[in-house]
Image (cartoon, rainbow, N blue to C red):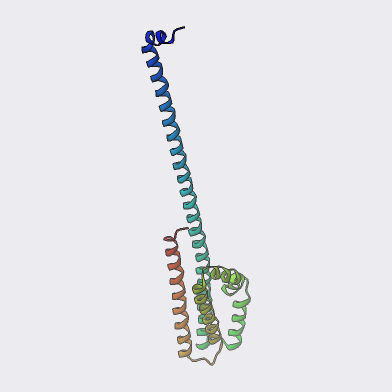
Length: 194
């Protein structure tokens, strides 16, 4: 067989066939490149979604922790208000010292009292505050110390009104700073990259 004659006689068909093979090869190569690019884009998108999910989870956990800590703070002030009302009743003569002591004992030992609830969640709250950072933990410890000091002042019948008022103002200021610090931490967590 004479290949030169064969090529001359079938040149158009061979040229068309070569074009088909070349076109197919270019299409396959283009599809391969496109699929590879799509796979990289899908991986980037999946990683971005994973990163966003982690961030959302971290913010949600922090929000829940801060809510629990704020609940403890509210319980502290609820208990303080109950003691203040009890003290006012004693000071106005509505109840005697013995009745005051009996009601205070009920307030501190009753299963449904704010004081009992505080005792139940105190360790958990300490842990949550501790993992929130040294500055917040220090502020919380100061707030708890002022809370204890204020309860002692309220429980002492010989304490002056001025001492009670000063201790209360310190407690409120400390509680306010603590709450503000918690909220700032929550807000700043939304700006943090995880």
